[in-house]
Image (cartoon, rainbow, N blue to C red; front, side, top):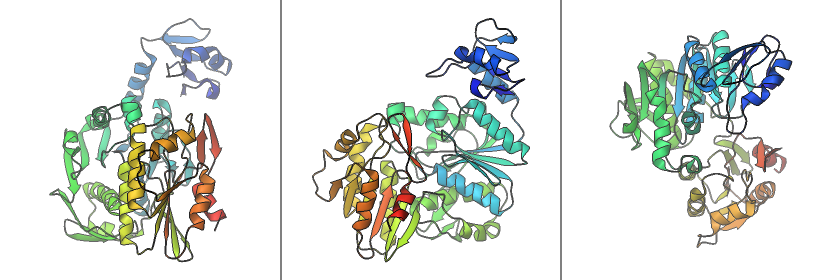
Length: 434
């Protein structure tokens, strides 16, 4: 088997020495040989086992994986918000329709009853290939996967010719990496340039960037005039005048559900095939996860961008309530320009906000909180750097028919402090304090 991590090499494996951002695989060749590698693919050097020297191990690997892709259909979903929910819905509907399908993304790797966590939304080249290969060997017809802009920019999916590409939306995020919105947009475009000649793009026509991805074959969905015309903004909505009901709250989830429905229409399913399974679809873990507490609601969600925060707080207008209390922060070592924007949105759309830590990483949490709040000219907020204490204070603030929003981390079971992942689960903290 081909391996790029010397720690996992076993007897008879081939080790390929890749140049990473932090490590040079050539430094681990001797360890790989000690662990049993019988062939080395490298860019330089002489070794005691069979060796293939190539100009670029990265380019060699991309070509090798492309030429050895299993016969399985790949659905890529990209966008700032909605990737996880849209992928999860497609995976869930496949399950309900008895269509063998695997999921790869923020929630991990789902294959039949198997659930494993992944280090990245979109894994590295070789790890991703092995997940796709495992899905094929398990009998899957489809893999639905989240495709992040960073993965596209770094070429992690460059060996894949996508059968379907779904675009959800594009709003500000990841500018710490892409620098400009133009750079962010260009990264997203790569996925649609990798569609097969007979592949299909499914595009949110209401997003002004959607025209940028009209590269080959495509269909559109949206409230604006589209191939698949949406009407309705609640749990009841229609596509091309055919009515659906769903469990998921919010107009943003109508977009997510509509993208999934469009995909299944393209497979040949119709309204009668889908209407009952759409009504059964739940939301993925950490996405609009509602906990009832006396007369109050506590909602846990992953919203961590200005657009996602706006959408999720706006959708609460459809839920009868007294006060909205929001707990939110911003991640360290990430786009700093969105921090004051997040502070402004949270305080404008909530009765009370508790700003707290998210994943501070290498930054001082107090400096992040200062970035969020320094330009605010309102008084309806508090600062509590301890996320656990912030959640406790939020629960204690609930009176009657209030909504407490615990935002930013959703399904995550950790906080990243420095280089360390510390166990932390928003939902567990909530449940332990009810």
